[in-house]
Image (cartoon, rainbow, N blue to C red; front, top):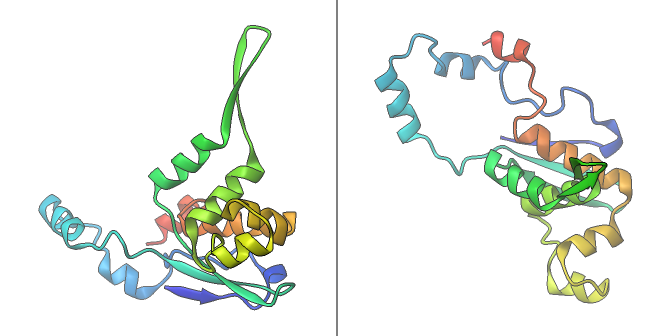
Length: 164
């Protein structure tokens, strides 16, 4: 399931769909499936078959191919970018949203390889995240992070599910 976006500034709310409106998906999902049919379907499913999307970065003239992440992968990125601070006897967790978005992009990118030795050398960076900081604008990082979350099934409304 690959989609092309014409312009990263033209992303609309319904750009990333999880195929909830496709007739083919509706036909595959039988609401009255038995427990054993559901288990069999899960056993026969390919967990590596994740939605992907090509997002063109018009300013740089390159396509960025992103794939969906599992809940576990998103949680790991969130944990790495969350710190605990104490204020007046209260413990509060604070998410570094820029780091979270960059972590999502690094974990999700199929192409290009942000950690390619040529890029690390050119931008005098020690990691793919450092390359992202030096190449992409803040809005581009935010955009790509949002696309990863959409691909990964976040921001799906209950109405989308009810329409199956």
